[in-house]
Structure formats: structure tokens, C-alpha cells
Amino acid sequence: MKTIAKIFLVALLAVSTMQAAAFEKVAKSRSAKVTISSEKPITTGYNDLNIVIDKKFADAVVSIKVFMPAMPGMPYMDNTAEAKNLGGGKYKTNVNFSMGGTWQIHIFITPKTGKKIRVKTSVNI
Image 1 (cartoon, rainbow, N blue to C red):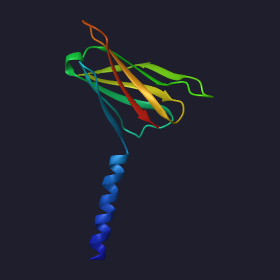
Image 2: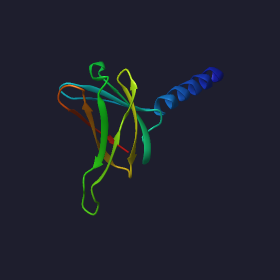
Image 3: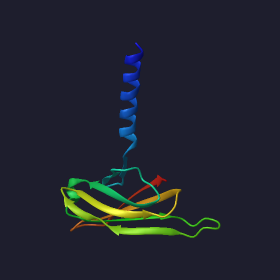
Image 4: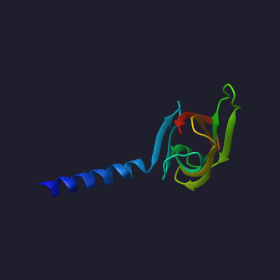
């Protein structure tokens, strides 16, 4: 019985560790849905982010802005980056979260025709 319990605990720990090893967040605007993910948990410093957008915007130009508003004793901080188009609505970019806290994320989707779209979300680091 103890062996079965140990095997179960090890399996549970392995599965929970795999779930904690990545980051994923879905953000929506009126006209677009965006999934932001990372192979590693988001940390302070530079992070590689994968962005997946609706297929109807697959050939759009995508950029990202992450920022933290100014607070007493701390200046406004931001980082912007262009996302590389991987095809099929998938994009990859690298952004810098220079310190821990709540960061606002704005993803700008500029389709070849039509209006620029902004999708907003946030992340705690």
C-alpha cells in the first residue's frame, strides 16, 4: 500500500510540475482573440512570448507593449517589441519585464486592410 501511495504522489508531483512550467493567457477585444504563452514561467527580465491570433488576421503586423504605470517613488516603465510572423496566425517576440509587479500588456494587430486592433490584458510577476 505504501508503494502505491508513493507512486501516486510522484506521478501527481510530476504532473503538477509540468503545469507550472509554462504560462498561458487568453485576451479578447471586440474583434480579436489572442493567446499569449511562454514555454517557461514569466519572470523578471527578458521573456520569449508566443502569440496566437485569430486566423482572419494571420497576415497582420503584430507588436506588443508591456508597461507599468508610474507609482509614488517609481517611474513609468515600458518595453515594446515587434512580433515575428511564424505563419498561420502564430507570432513570437521577446519582451523585458524589468521588475516584479503587475504589468499591463497591449497587443497591437495591424491587418493589411482595416483598422488597427488593440487587445489588452495584464500579468503579475
